[in-house]
Image (cartoon, rainbow, N blue to C red):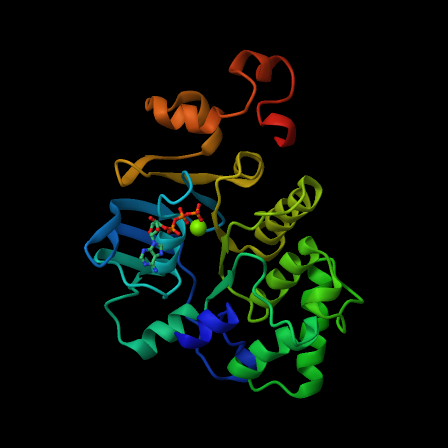
Length: 290
Ligand SMILES: Nc1ncnc2c1ncn2[C@@H]1O[C@H](COP(=O)(O)OP(=O)(O)OP(=O)(O)O)[C@@H](O)[C@H]1O
Ligand SMILES: [Mg+2]
């Protein structure tokens, strides 16, 4: 999986390229079964059990350092769990051989923090690099695909720009365009809005919703940004840094108001208006609730 960690992108090779046979997508594209993540003897999270359904925007949340990114690494082929299984489209990701795993992971696109673009390449070249690695498309076809993907994220006309020539929000969206290059069924985001101003952050949330609705992608987002969680999340898991396991799963807004775990309610109400004020005023999602 060296290519993935450097390019930050995987995905299915299109039928046109003939390189990979597509299997039908599953209704439960991702299942986490009693997973433990650890670095040597240091257990980060254990006994994790949750399911991501097709069309979900699934949030992995929890305080800083609780292990959100580490758990995501198990899903994108970057770090094997110490225990348990990760089922991607019904196949146990860490129990199949490396070739099969690599094929399976081509159905996934990953957007890393800050977009993870190559600074010495234009936006179009960043996308074309992925196409070059995984498809047999001609140079002209690659140019067309990269143009299309950039347009999809609102960056039409920016093909020849270098990452340093555009804003942080635009860089993040260019990272999304690259992750979309191979038309993934599953898209993973690690802290997509970290370090962005509220408006860029909101635009990115809107883009994530649009990708789910227009492309039918299933999306997993690692974040602790409450505004984003309530704006886009349809399901979630809450990771606890002290108990080192999940303390809740479900619709984040429902958990905020009804979880029987006070720590979960507190986490999700942090900095938000009280329940009475919300129902009387801003629609229950904070300033940015849908
Ligand atoms: N490569 C590593 N080797 C050893 N320990 C690590 C490594 N990467 C992360 N950790 C530790 O694992 C724990 C979880 O880290 P992780 O980055 O997954 O948390 P996180 O919830 O994503 O944090 P943040 O909100 O800051 O992004 C932390 O205690 C961290 O110090
Ligand atoms: Mg992290």
